[in-house]
Image 1: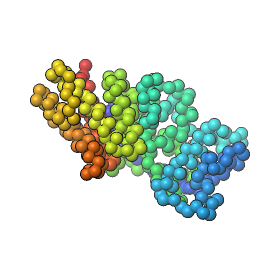
Image 2: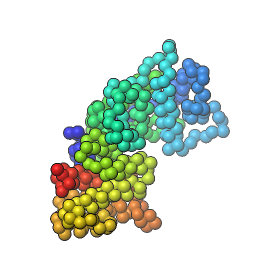
Image 3: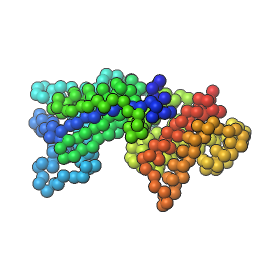
Length: 337
């Protein structure tokens, strides 16, 4: 927690660790050949798309983004397959590494973890392929990771960003443990980065940790559910919906603050107007007001679909502003104990 919260409040100052993993596409294809060699019941078409490219002369090399999706899908399927099927002999007999006790969270499991509590650590062995999800939260070490792949016809390159240094090391060990691929993978440790190009990458994963394991007992579920949705739609690149959900989280808290100050039901005003009415009673701290303004600016852009463009930057800024405002409201503001 001592690293995650400061990172959430100021990603540039906290910085992130970066590592790059390179996997040859030919090695990924070779892994599938070995799987098919040992498991006669497995159909290549059901587990590997890249391997089909060399079998079908009618298939041309797809665009980079599609190729990247195929490569990650293939790698996930291979890892999942090796977890449930381990030959008694041969190169595939080694175990895929899943650090004991690590529970992996992704955006679609946030609410489940909060509702059910931490799941049995023994179940983590079945989620090794979750290491290849875009946003990963590690509960044991309280770390947030971003997996950012890109592929061409020869190489799959994966940039790994983590809030703690150990996060990239865990991912590297996972890659090294995969038969055929691991022994030849190229791994470059690029150190700690503070630039805006890099430091915001694990932010959605850090929000997952924050929601599920740091503030889930002090912040109401309905508010955290808005953050859950904001992260899920961020992963899907549905920027407008992600922004709106972050804005609703702030708007709902402003309404509660209004009712604490004025002792009456909050008016159904949009975010900016509600903030202005609150400030007639009590001025918000300058930094907190700025956070609300950032969220509101992104919200305005998101709802004016025909005239304003929004993208990852606006969705990320809305999420950051909403997290900062929520943290203030429940730690220093009028909703704190």
